[in-house]
Each structure stands twice: as structure tokens, then as C-alpha cells.
Image (cartoon, rainbow, N blue to C red; front, side, top):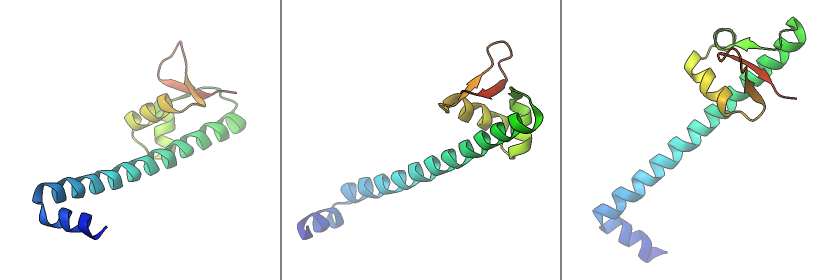
Length: 98
């Protein structure tokens, strides 16, 4: 283990690559956490909206307005979520799958 640390410390290219890998990993974990949090917020909004208003489908703009997310982020997260589907007739509206 000590030889590995010495090799990384004494080689500029290797230490740069290791540092970049660490920074990249931290960034990836942070993005995954934000995506999961925002997806849960959207899912909760759609669930509450369906029970309180009776609307099956909600527009991207309505979701964005109520969750304080951008419309492009809402569309991206909804498209990737396994329990949210897009309306086939009106492409900018979303519903929960049962």
C-alpha cells in the first residue's frame, strides 16, 4: 500500500488522473443524489395532484411551477422515471403508471 501511495505521489500524470477520478466520482454522486431527490418531488406532486384535483395528466409547466424546477429538468426526469409516463396525444403532459 505504501508503495502505491509513493508511486502516485511521485508521478505527476498518475496523481492528476487519480485526482480527476476522485473529483469526477464526487460530482457523479452529487448529480445522482439531486436527480433522485427531484424525481421524488415530482412523483409526490403527481400523486398528490391526482388525488386532490382529479387530473390524471399534468403539464410540464404545471409540474415545474409547483416543484420549483425548470421545465427542461422536469421533462428530463419524467422521461427517465420508471413510474411516470408521457401522454401519447399531448406530449408535454405526464401521469403516473399504475
